Image (cartoon, rainbow, N blue to C red; front, side):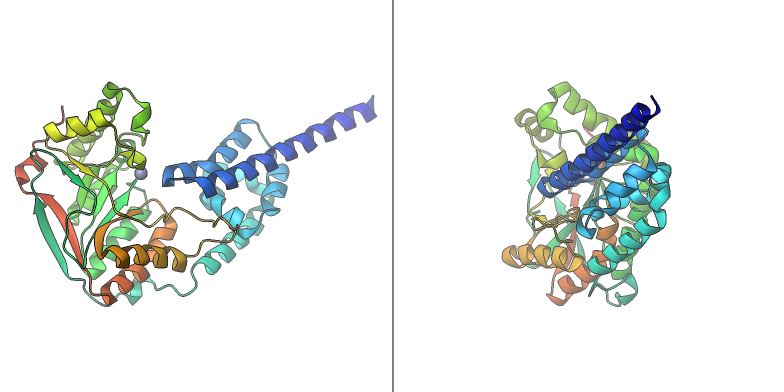
Length: 346
Ligand SMILES: [Zn+2]
């Protein structure tokens, strides 16, 4: 009887181990194939949440995590740092912390810090007529002009780092915010706005609009508009679809309600932590790939995320290289400044 019990226990631990390992395999694959920040972020989080719900032991979790390469482990960086999951990795906290430090060192070779930013960027505010609709892809800026955008925040700590870096070089940027994050951290949205940046609408919870009814799409935009107006007293009439997934009926609605469809032309893919060949995606690589796109077009709207610690790590070097190339940073504003306080979104 005792033997049977021991066999059952070891079989169940073994199958638990197998399932955690295959969940992690799946997460790595999902992250590599992800098309957006939100999708990539979810990959490892799902594994941790499932493990928590199934009361997976720290022993099982640690064995599965420590068996991973640094590149694979990098996709779980945020979860490993999250106090919410700390019991789940109680047995290997120190080892994991050391591995994450190694990953950061590997990722951060040859990058500058904000203390290295000893220059001011040429900066200009430009106005666009949004009244009867406007689709921003390149921002219609001139050659050697770039618009900076940061999506998916506000974030309790990282957004402040972005604002500090921007202030250091004397430029402003667009923050496309998710309504429910504004509800969680209104003081961060206030801080970003107070520093002269633009606050736009990036839906309530980052849902894919192509999967929602028109009424639900409208609710996503209207709730976020209300939340941001209640928080800072205004909102720029700029809406950015999650994943850039536009819908014809909402495009039409935006046009008739004086709201810009605010897309981007340069994607930094700053959320991607691992390359298809399973190596760590370094910050130097993200910077180079982004600059290559800018060099090719000579202008454009750049997409970053202020919810990624790696974005803070790479921003000083990115800005330095962009400055060396003779670019100017542009912030877009509606020609009718009253529209900031009188949104036509119901
Ligand atoms: Zn987004």
